[in-house]
Length: 377
Image (tube, rainbow, N blue to C red):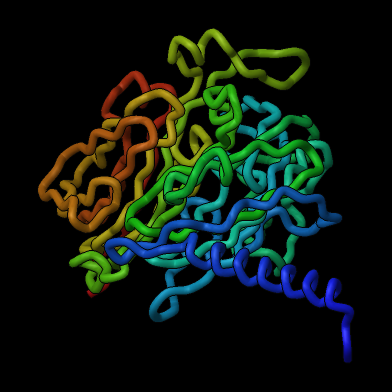
């Protein structure tokens, strides 16, 4: 086929420009010290998606953590949509929350150091989304919340711009963490370069308000070479401490208390989003078990002195990183957004109380129970 010279030159220029753009995009990604940086630019778009708000094989509801059942590294495709829900956080205390996926905290994402995550999020705060209908689609999270709707979640609407800030992600915040309006979606990639347990939260101002209103969760990044006691662990759970700043509003619902949040005077301090859930549904183990807890203090503002009454922490990896190992600790001090991976041996049959040893917080709800049965072996 013969082209006029001018057309041929134009086509050649376009092809070369395309190759140059592709080469430039490829060279933007680079490796340093065995880690991957330089992710493609985030994309904001619109879609007709109205399916499950949480999609991904390794997304679970607290305190569950799905085991990683693959060798090497994996490319995860993950969706966590923003929806409004009326939820219960203590007996008789309900408020309309901004959520990731429908619960507070949002779903737990479990990946391995070095895994790549392609993340999609739609801001569905302007539409009613039900999370409690049984479904096998989406993720383990969707099945678990349908079976255990302890927050008595009801769909609602509360349109507002929101964003996603993964502390586990090493990317430019002005690109990946940008705010999207109701009806918009965003997608971006990130690589889990560092092992540990990391908070995620909304980064749209006021960050204090958005986080306190319910927009936070945890990513557990397991070390590629594991922890030294992995083969001994019998039970593994995720525990998140957080605060609510609520006051009585009109009707039956509570509302956000701006002044209390500014002065760090929470109305409730809780584990896994509810004042009594870890007593109503205690963690379960047996005497002699090695129990592993991934504990994150999601704040947004308070500290946590995490303790288990009747146990000594045999191993503690601060921030969940395998190099940060400590032994024989009675209490782990966690600032807002700090975490620890904790191993302890259950000494005998009985009840063991999880507690924030800052007792003012414990009296506002930061307690839970691990129920131990008799030794099996």
